[in-house]
Length: 69
Image (tube, rainbow, N blue to C red; front, side, top):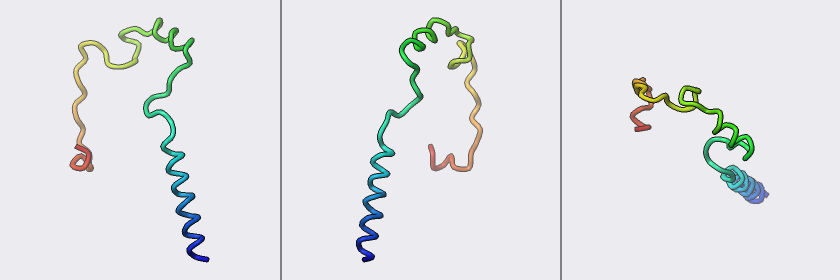
């Protein structure tokens, strides 16, 4: 009986991992009609992305930097 419970739990975990892997990684995309409108209205100083000639942000240390870099 315990083997069946463990097998069922393993199957459910595998299904959850497979379902979690579905989709597109990255930012959400706008619908096509809004995408064109956003491109037409965005300017260099609209707050979307870096401003031209802007200085890079200084690095702030973090406790896990050794693992992340």
